Length: 412
Image (tube, rainbow, N blue to C red):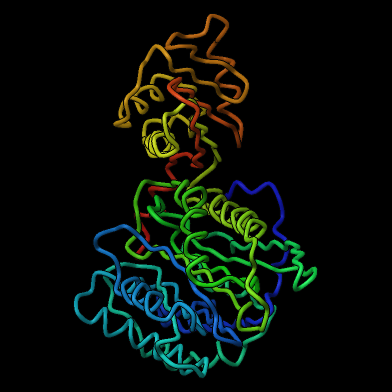
């Protein structure tokens, strides 16, 4: 059961974009017609593009191809094609052939040039890629293109996800030359397991009509990714295929470039954080959603690294699962972070319950108090290391028997 205490609102259409999907039986021919597994996002005009990619050294060919396309054609992107069910990774030289063929199919379906198309794949690693099955049915994606199909896009990139992940934001801009205008950001993402990104998430596609050039988009996306997609962990494994694409149609629609991008950055950060948190809330076998807030660090990077070390510790995560406020496991993880720590300055809280103060068990603390917090579906673990003023938040879940079951049977 996902830890999702609220209902997602329908994603908003973004001016300048249409979305379609197809059921191609990517993972298995038996699934053709039963679930959507190919997504096509098409820009009506040349879009500005930015991207962040996995830091896994064994990354998929679609990642290399996407990175090259963004580097060379960032101001002239017209489409994204993505599939779920097969990662097209770890399959040798044919991987690059199949990646290019997927791009070519996307270009044909969108009626654009191949060098204007970005691609992404997710699913089983090490299986031959069923390009023929996609080729036979990709027309469904182009036939279904519509402005309000973002929900279908989110559905079509799912693998072990139990629900589609999407969100939207709007923000207002008033500039002297253009007057007031409302812009939209809509994003979809997928991810449930193999989540410990070093750039982004498993897959994420975000579109906006805010008129911002590619170089500015890239700077903003890289910054936002650090506090969102780079701040989550389900199981500590960084995928071969992690990709986030951000496209803007605004300049192609004739709007003048925004001089002040602060409103856009704030809204984009909200979108990215919600998409990232949805991934943790839907983590494989997850029953708890835990925010790990690290304060008192010498730098934001130190705080994030320490938070991630706690977030991936199997002993800490199983303590979460068992509602066991075993603070010894937490200080173990803190000590394993690789950061300089002075143990006599470390304090730990679970919600408002102070467990450790300046390296000593707090005199008022009892196990019953800690257990009551750890039994909640959601709680905040705060670690203050007392060395500086920097802070960071990392989101994670627990580690349950269900995670093992899901991944033991993943290919069957």
